[in-house]
Every structure is written in structure tokens, then in C-alpha cells.
View 1 (cartoon, rainbow, N blue to C red):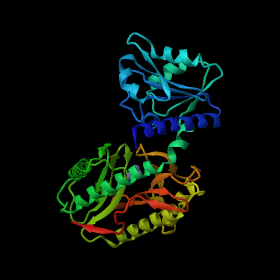
View 2: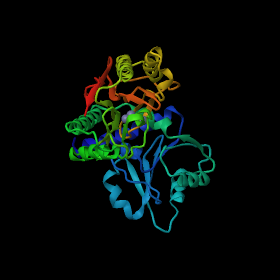
View 3: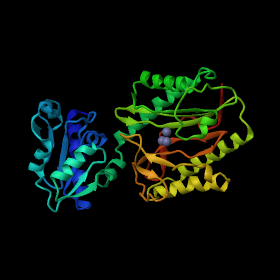
View 4: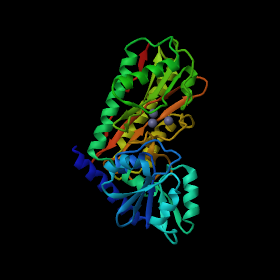
Amino acid sequence: MTANSETNEYAARAERAQAALAAVKCDWLFVSHSTDLLYLLGFTKRPSERLALLLIPREGRAKMVVPGFELPVFQPYASYFDLIGWEETENPVAKVREVVGEGASQTIAIADQLHTVFTLRLQAALAGANWLEGNRVLARIRMVKTAAEIDALRAAAAKTEAALESLLAQPIAGQTEREVLRSLHQGLVDRGLELSGGGIVGAGANSASPHHKTGDRRLAEGDALVIDFGGGWRGYRSDITRSFHLGEPPPEFRRIYQITHEAQQLAFEAVRPGVTTEEIDAVARGHITAAGYGPAFLHRTGHGIGLDGHEYPYLVKGDRTVLDEGMTFSIEPGIYLAGKYGVRIEDIVAVTADGAERLNHFPRELRVVD
Ligand code: ZN
Ligand code: ZN
Ligand code: ZN
């Protein structure tokens, strides 16, 4: 993409945000440093004690209140909005009030990620306003990816799988969970991916804890192993889980692996436009429940993915998001038997016109490693 078409893309996203504001009868959208800002601007940084706030009105031109000495940083991105700088001795919330007024009878959507201290100050200064969660405006837009966004997710997935494959090219028995995770992270860095932190390596009984905190347990023959990790490619995230066994697994491990594998496949086959997220969860859960392991499937079936590793929609009972072409999310059923072992198989998928495409291609068959 050229710089100009990128600029147009961000302006188009802001226009979609304005249409979404109209749809929920909301007057303003406030967005600070976060993936929401990255989505709307192509730029963000770590939030700090200095307020930077994009103010998108339902109609008309947007404004952005930023620290005055950072104006040169924001200038290249200010295509569809005007910048308003605040000096170190000024109150940035007062600048917001100059734009918005006191908020009387206005509804303001405030993006999900904003330091609480700013939310409290804004609510005090704009005392007449009604407040709405920013996801009511932005989630719907961010959920549906463009072809370029899906390309980035596909590249992130492929590079992450290469890192996993290179880990398994050598024996891993004898290493600690932490050492394995460090190798995986190094594999991501070597392939140009951004580290997003986190990642789960659970060996033996630790594999039965879905969000196990990777520790110092040493991998040994006879251990089950769950590996769940990812990184970022141009901001877009990968997230894959595979379960392995060091040496020959016991029959029950094979059984829960097979059931999880089938549940993952059935849920994938159920994805198409028009189906709801909770229906996909019900497909995976129904299969595991029918096999007698319902209570051992401890979590939802999946989550959206994009600029955030976890974002809307969520594949869980009660979430009735209707799937649409371009939505991307994980399908990651699991069975966890406390004190013994656990299995989870996770792929990222993209909804297509008549079904779904897997963005992950790492084999899902049970693999015995050493
Ligand atoms: Zn998780
Ligand atoms: Zn994961
Ligand atoms: Zn996940």
C-alpha cells in the first residue's frame, strides 16, 4: 500500500466509526492510546500519565487533544482530524471540554482501554453526559477484517508455526517449561515477529490447567505437553495451541486427544456467515459432552483476534454475534483432567463467503515427541 491509500484506509475507518455512532445514537467516541487508536490512526504508543485523546463526533471533523510537545509526532497521522495541543501547565480535560461542551444530554462512547484516572476526570468535567462502552461502537467494525488484515494474520500464523516446528526439531525432554517458552519466543523474534508477552508451556499435570503459569518444571518422558503461544506481524497477532506427548501416551490421553481433535474439526465445519458465535461453542461443547467430558471443557470455545490477541467476538454461550465474512477468531476446545493431563487444540480461522478458512496449518494429529 502507498502512504496515501493507507491514509484513506484510516479515514474510511473513522467514517465507519461515525456511522456506528449514528447507529447507536451516540454523539462522540473518545479513544486514547490502545489498539483502538492503532486501528483508527495507524499509530499508538504505551498509554502514560499525559492524556492523548481522539474525539470523533457523529458528524463533522474529528479532533485530537495531545501533549503540545508531541504535536510533531502526531502531525503525520492527522489526515481526518485537527490536532489540539495542551501545554504542560494546562489541564487536558479542559481542552476536551472546549470541544465537546459540558456534555449536557450528549452520549459519549469511551474506548475500552483508557486509564481509569482519565475516565474519572472526564466524567467529572462532562457531568451532563451519558457514557457508553466504546466496544458498542468499535467492536462491530474491528471484528470484520479486510483482505490485507487477514493477510497479516495469515503471515503471523505461518511464522509462528515455523517457530514451533523448529523447537520440535530437537529433543525437548530435560528442558524446563520456561526454557521451552524462551526458545519459542526466540523463534518468533528470529522470524521478525513482535513479542506480545505471555505464552503457555504446561508439562505433565500442569497441562490440565488451561492458563498454567509457565514455570520451572522439567519435561520428562511420560509427560503430556500443552504449548500455547503467539506473536505479532505488523501488529496483527497469532495464537496457536498444540498438545503433545513425550513418549507413548496412555489410552485415556489418546481418547481425550481424539475427542478434542474431532470437536475442533466439527466447530470449524460449522462456521459460515449467519451462524452465531454461541452456536459454534455449542457444536464443540456438544461433542465433548456427548463423549462424557463436558465438565472437563473448562472455558469458552474461542475469541476474536486481530490487533489484539483476544478481542470481539467471543465464542461462548450468551454471545449471539452473527458471523460475517471477514471475521477472524480462534477455535480452541480442550479437555482437562486435573492431576493427570490436558489437551487443547487451537487454530485461527477466517469466515469466508460460504464457510471458513484455517489460517493455521500445523498438523492437528497427535504427535509423540521426545
Ligand atoms: Zn486462553
Ligand atoms: Zn492460545
Ligand atoms: Zn486463543
